[in-house]
Image 1 (cartoon, rainbow, N blue to C red):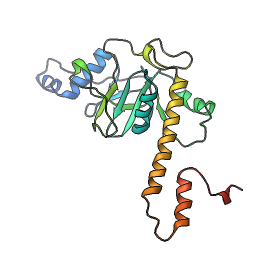
Image 2 (image 1 turned 90 degrees about the vertical axis):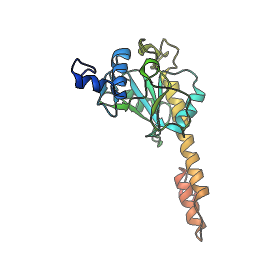
Image 3 (image 1 turned 30 degrees about the vertical axis):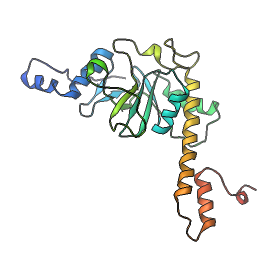
Image 4 (image 1 turned 60 degrees about the vertical axis):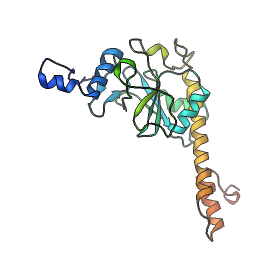
Length: 228
């Protein structure tokens, strides 16, 4: 894959010096020069996947639950605008997700669990440290921008910290199978919780039987008469 990097920030030209003072240009410099990660665009800045890392993406509520179950992962970002959690995984792992889900017996189950590989992109979180950004422990109702929840370490290779199939990364990250298993479980759990909440919040009116049928279908079950 050929990656075309944007024009470097901060040339000797006066207009470029003004451009370099903008936060997004400082962010781009941080990612490209301190992390060695290719970027795309300017406002908003995006990180290209499939080069240094792939991304495992899931809903924010499920993602925060995974953080509670898996204490050590690679870098993890939260996109408040999309309300998605993004776990960085080893490059090439995105192609393994369908087979892993089948092997874990999640094949055919509707999950909001996807992976980004070559040609994909994600919103660049606010840099940490010298990038004048911030990171922190946010909940699903936190910031509307993309931030690092478990940030990468500037100046260090990211690859050893990323989940891979087998024994996991040298940086102490879990193996990819365990991470995908936890992510699939939490995605399914939060989907059932949403279905239950929708069932409780929906007024029954004068059609209790129709409501019961719809609620059971939304939860992934069927009335007994349809299973005989």
